[in-house]
Length: 289
Image (cartoon, rainbow, N blue to C red):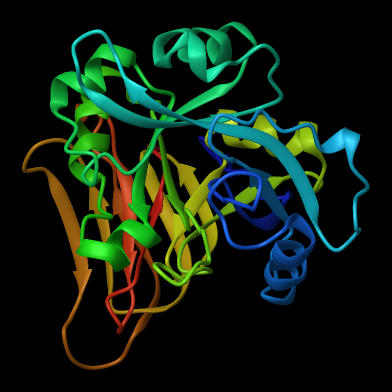
């Protein structure tokens, strides 16, 4: 058996790629966040405070989970379009005064992953998606969904997939944990990596060896002989999603829940991914297979 993106022998690690602390506009310190997230089974978190390129090596690690470097940019590009953009990686020389576009250039030049944050909430257009050729798109943002129902980024991800079928999909908390929006642990990524170490986690994210979820588990994802086989926690629906109107679905609104499915993947589809949905309507997504 072989896997297109997922390695059967590797382990799964739970993490979040969009978290805020008291360094910017969050309500919790890193130590408080570490205790909270570790208690929910997290293995790693990225530090993505606004316009603050973190350096986890400069601070003591508490040992409860792995901290990784990141940043969030916000502002307008030369067309006047507003963006929030997550950079995953360790960066130097990023300055708000230089503006959004210089920040994007710095992330790319230093080998970071460039993620389009909550595009529905930002009212970003398809042209906004195409213009910057993001490495990934937030398909679900927990806080934006809680605030005004605008946490879904699936349409924007499909625009990006049409341009680059390897564009990543990420589900995130965007946790601030303040009175105005206290939610957290509502969406996360499960990374398929050899070890919970910075290089291994970042490499797996870059390669798309993870799935994003609001609750359902994908226990195994295999591709062989033009088919994809998936094993899951109990779910109501399993879908193979392709471009435009293309797709397949198994499951029913009533009756016994499923724990797996097999699909033929049409060779003429430019991309396909899996979406599962549990009995509470919570979903999970693979990257393009």
